[in-house]
Length: 140
Image 1 (cartoon, helix red, strand yellow):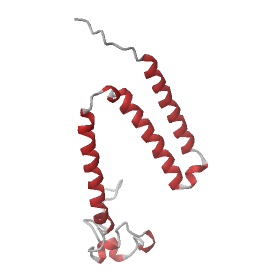
Image 2 (image 1 turned 60 degrees about the vertical axis):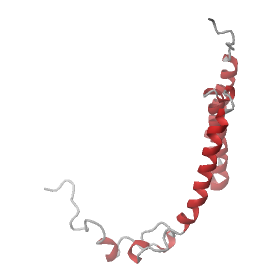
Image 3 (image 1 turned 90 degrees about the horizontal axis):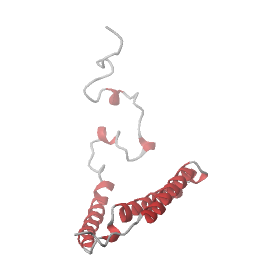
Image 4 (image 1 turned 45 degrees about the vertical axis):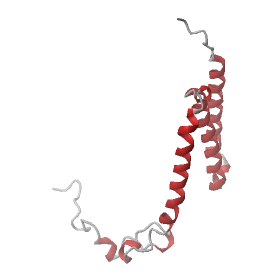
């Protein structure tokens, strides 16, 4: 039997390809523009462009546009679970340094302004090597 339902989508895929090329050019332009001087706006623009490119690839090149309704059965529960996982972990991530010991708190990435320099004697002697015990490259 021959497949009589064949549809030539070369023109559609060519249009999508050139849209992807255009979006990539826009992302390079945004990356080199003054918009990146404002991190929130710059990275938001980059994420919007990246999501648009991902949607084009998913919808057309992965052929989800022409799939049956089972795609919703697979994607909606995964989206709900991933959203819940992120929402459940946000308080844990925000409060992760509350129970740290003072020596660990010093090196936690919670507040960059409160970190002491690595020249402190407490900081130098933490870990498996002190400065004297570290192997020196090039010496015998």
